[in-house]
Amino acid sequence: MDRALLESTLAGTGEPSYRAAQVWEWVARGARSYAEMTNLPAPLRERLEAEVPLSTLAVRAEAKSDDGTVKTLFHTADGRPLEAVLMRYRDGRRSVCLSSQSGCPLTCTFCATGKMPFGRNLSAEEILDQALHFRRVEEIDHVVFMGMGEPTMNIDAVLAACELLPDLGVTYRRTSISTVGWVPGIDRLAECALPIGLALSLHAPNDGLRSQLMPVNDRYPLVEVLAACERYRAKRRRKVFVEYVMLDGVNDLPGQAREMAELLDPRGYKVNLIPYNPTGAYDGSSPERIERFRAILAEHGLTATVRLTRGRDIAAACGQLAATSA
Image (cartoon, rainbow, N blue to C red; front, side):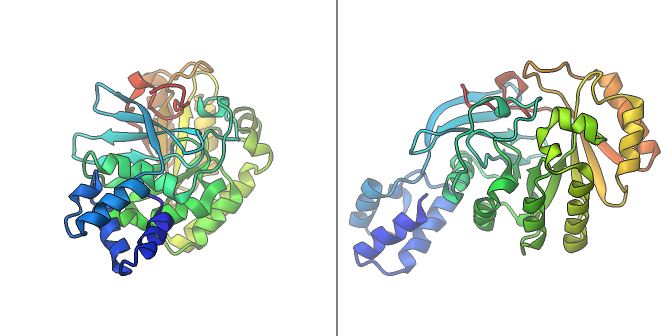
């Protein structure tokens, strides 16, 4: 919802200032229309219905996975495509994966988003409206900024959206921002007052391989990225989650696991090994290779888990978002 448009519309009708808070409370609770907002006068509801859309985004397509995951393709008002995902878990969690940009300018070789044309940063309203779309379906309790785009390149808008997530039922401590290692954005997150989690997309234990997989490493090499993560840890007193996509014969060798174990302090990092979701660029590591890699990390004291893949059959899993279809 464009809250500035809402406030200016209400002001233009001479309504009291508290009306904006009333509308937002309904929207954050999942209202699907102004007709549900029964504590607003009927004429006002009709005017808002005509002049202030409940969302800045238009739904273009939706796909549902056999595992309950839902992927939605949106377009912004100026026609920029983006996707967001609702992930349902058996323990009752309802997690939403949000996009921060239309496309991504950083072109990681294993990620489908990097292959599509980069559009632009999304506004705070466009980011929040992705979560609100799913909140109209059911209650949500976790948000991860692991969708399309590099969140820390658009950190002001991302944090502005995060400030309002508790109104939707998502606490700050159940919100995580993922980065490929954009150092200024990590430092900005460390300095903000919100206790939001940080996830680092590492994917290689050394600069040579990491630059092959992730060109951003040429700008911010590992020593600078990990120094920024240490500044975040010192400020926030929280572990950093490390994401590591498993690519067969590329980054999944035993020696690379040992190299990674030497790189990361077990006291400050938890590793999440991600089975590769096909995008046409690589082959994924076998379950046996992934387990061997995990075991080596564990031998060196690093906590490592294997991510449960969700939505692969509808190209909604990690690295698959491309906004070409849903």
